[in-house]
Length: 139
Image 1 (cartoon, rainbow, N blue to C red):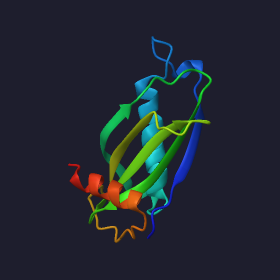
Image 2 (image 1 turned 90 degrees about the vertical axis):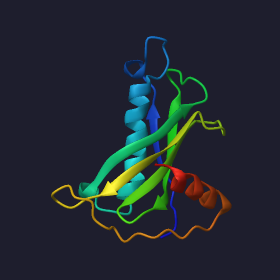
Image 3 (image 1 turned 135 degrees about the vertical axis):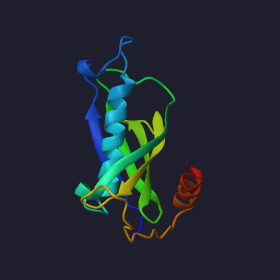
Image 4 (image 1 turned 135 degrees about the horizontal axis):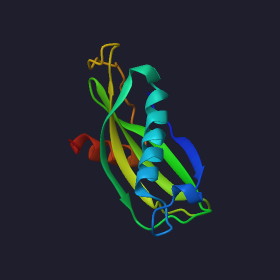
């Protein structure tokens, strides 16, 4: 399969803010995992996917109320039973990401036991190959 990007946008509202008046990290983590899950669920049945680990979730600047958080996610690495997604958050009309990181998901059976998923990535772009190498090194 070829990596495909998925987009997920959220309006940052007052209930999403921390005590500094910027996007609460807990809320951004929720959205971050949802964005990664959307990419994983594009390739596998959602009922068989569980989140194993968030590999970093690094902000480069605060996100303010009223800004539109535009998440982009895609599968960048596949193992035997797992896959890793790369997620980045950009603000509407801005090119540079303000948040990025990786998530590992595992394909499981109805008893929660890891099972081979049979996915294989066809990496075509240099960016995909770079993300694949970074994801491969994550534990």
